[in-house]
Length: 481
Ligand code: GLU
Image (cartoon, rainbow, N blue to C red; front, side, top):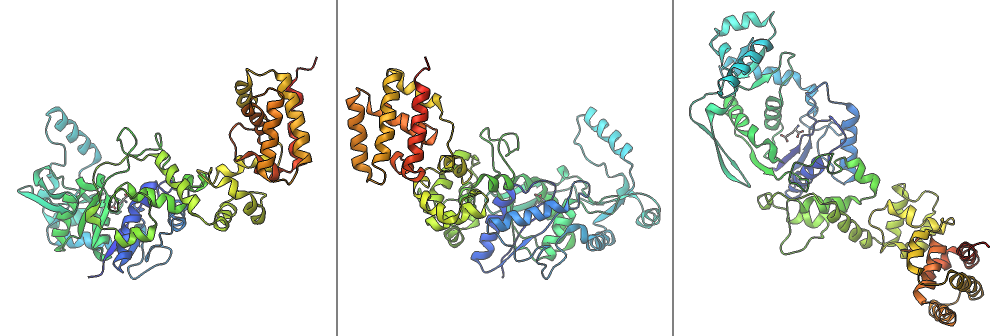
């Protein structure tokens, strides 16, 4: 049997990191088995769905290298892949359930439902529809349906239990009396999530549903629907939610959730994928860094761990830094340019300077700021310098810096070691700590107390320009009197 997986996002906001996470597992499993991975757009919430969000979802997944075999963009044998365009199918299927008595029309007004809810609350009874319209004669209901606003509900058999297997959790058993007569078609004729989801998963031939664990409470209704249609449900595997550090479901307030943000920050797609995979899956042992091909080769849905991982950006930063260092210099330059992280830099110039930066980059967006001193003089950060030289006499530091500026110009192009020796000797001759002199030079040339190695930086800035920056700082250190 061909493995068919799917992801079914609702286009109601920026493309969500959770969509990438769920897509990764589904895509990988289809790929590993030579199956199909479907992207279905669940846009039945007409008020909140926007076409631009659908476009963003597709683009964000493409950025990650997750390309669906079937989608609204590429089509496929079960098109359309947008639920808003599949209305006739849902209506037809609702009709089938009405005809077999597994669903019924409900004419209760929202006022009646609200009053019922209040009563149930006051009596501390279970909340849910009381089944009033179930007693209507079907022919009578059919007649009223022509002119009266109504919904279609699933006729849940309240006796007994519903069971299903979750691949990661084992058997889950639910008392049927706790399951509400779920609305399947709303009064505007639009299907609810449950109806559309089940009909589509069946018609599209989905064999395994991997989705977030927050959907587990919906599964009993889905299983009842499969049964009402006479269909066999697919396999269910509910993956752990991405969580904030306090274990709550990942939220905008506590973590960036938009995939656009991750791209803009300069996370590499392969780093984000590696990090997302780690949230629910690990290869054997302590290995944490792997590429997506390895993931695809070895991923096994039954081995997804359910142990509530924490979405930790520090960890993602670490993975990203490692992946950056794993890129060949030419590739790193290309990514910086194509991602818009190196405006004004040519690839050739980038190649010359990247050896100094690749060790220090956490996100690609760090580059422009870290390397700014190579393109222009950066205002020296005196807060980085002054605490380091507070035991020194500012006049001595200034004089040493001025002399160092001459030395750097005179020895332009010389190898690092002799220049460093000469600078050490210079500091010693003035009774200055070597560290104080080097910090002065570093802050003068790069603007910061922490920077790539000093002498290579000076070479890239140019000896004359470096010397000019050093003299300028020296002049600022001596109080004008
Ligand atoms: N539209 C649902 C969502 O946005 C799909 C849930 C499912 O995969 O069944 O998460």
